[in-house]
View 1 (spheres, rainbow, N blue to C red):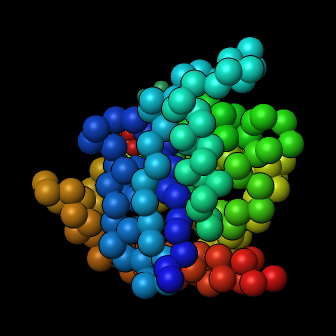
View 2 (view 1 turned 30 degrees about the vertical axis):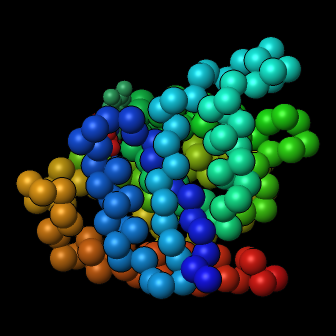
Length: 184
Ligand code: FNR
């Protein structure tokens, strides 16, 4: 059975370069992984008062993440940090206290930007949260994808061969990481 990997995309935008990257990764992944994007745009802003009777969308999201063998984050950078939609999803999944859905799941981060720095700031701010959430995160290769405006053709297919080769290496390294963490 392939491992079930929940892919959380930090952009809600229809034409998102991050979503296209996540879709490309799903195609490049080895047979040992099955990647599925888990939507986050429907989650109401985290409010601790709501957790007394949580919205259905929070419950479904938490259950989906809990069921996953691993989590792959693909995110843009907003103002040198993580987009609020992604931080909200992380907060929703982390509660109620003591019942975080994220705990122990092997994770990896890909950050994507049309800019030159490859959303490095978002990538590392996200790592800070994942330390607290006790998610073992793939260290190498790091994936800061800059200049992403030129990666895809008009049909949304990855056309840049260098990026394709790198993402193949990356997703294979993540597959090995998932195996290692889950069998440890
Ligand atoms: C951005 N963008 C951006 N890019 C970057 O490299 N570093 C940054 O700090 C920011 N800050 C930022 C803030 C806000 C509010 C927006 C809307 C955008 C640009 C961003 O990388 C660009 O819009 C990407 O295309 C967003 O990713 P998706 O939606 O294409 O996946």
